[in-house]
Amino acid sequence: MLLPDAGCSDYGERPSQRAQPALTYLLTVLPTSIFLGEVSVIQRSIQQTVWRPVEAVRDAVLLLLAPQPCRQCGALVECLNDGVVCRTCWETWRAEHATYLQVCDRCGYRAAAHGPAVVRRDRCEQCARWSLTWVRSGGVYTGALRAAVLALKRSPAVPVPLWTLLQETWQVQTVLHASDLIVPIPLAPLRQRLRGYNQAEILAKALARTTCLPVVTEALVRCRETHPHRAGLDAQARRAALHGAFQVLRPRLIAGRHILLVDDVLTSGATLDTAARSLLAAGAAAVSALTVARAAVRRRASFE
Ligand SMILES: [Zn+2]
Ligand SMILES: [Zn+2]
Image 1 (cartoon, rainbow, N blue to C red):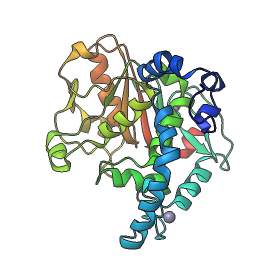
Image 2 (cartoon, rainbow, N blue to C red):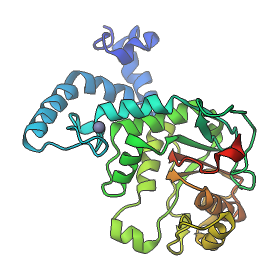
Image 3 (spheres, helix red, strand yellow):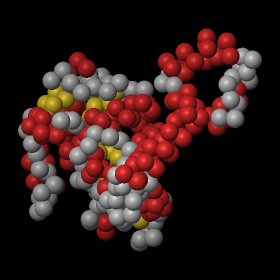
Image 4 (cartoon, protein in one colour):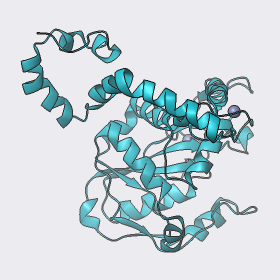
């Protein structure tokens, strides 16, 4: 007896699994897959055969009874999985994202390929003084991605395109694969109480489904609210505004480990770098960072 439904694309990608007897699959491959966090193979199989038609009916009913305009273009969002932005806007953003090239190997800064000549470097002016080992982001903070990130501050649901972007970024950015554990950038206690959740923690848990790395939320705390991106603040003033903002409560959890900080947006990098310095001072071996989005750098001339 062979595995169920060899027509499923996931099994199509794994011919060695397809040819295995079901008993062997149940006793060896399935437990191993679950142990390695590859249970998504089974989930996707179920999704394709059962859940997709249910989703199609759900989307048709929602479109009829509670149509939702796209936050980006105003057209109707036809698929609930796309979040607050329609599929066309996601495709537009992806097309735009593809025109950006990575300029800096260390912080992953990307510049528009159609701009002035891009010279790839091992570090840039923005990351030269950072304590972070590597920094990577899913894409430029514009259009659909910006709308989705802003929506995540109002509702803790991660839409499928955002989750896919996290997955793809992790798979491509192999410099991050030396990480031992994930630490989401914490919110100040009052902000966390008002919002009811931390969007960075939501993203960290979504990323953990792909990486199988543990998410540690109790090691790093934010002592107070900070506003490092206020207009008019230069890099030094931003750093001063963040001084003492983070504290490591349980250094035993991070000592000697390579930490991957996760946040929604990288703007100046001051928040991530301050958190990294606190973790390193408490004994972390190295700290890298992954954000879903990265704001465009205003002082582009200094990177070219
Ligand atoms: Zn749209
Ligand atoms: Zn850089």
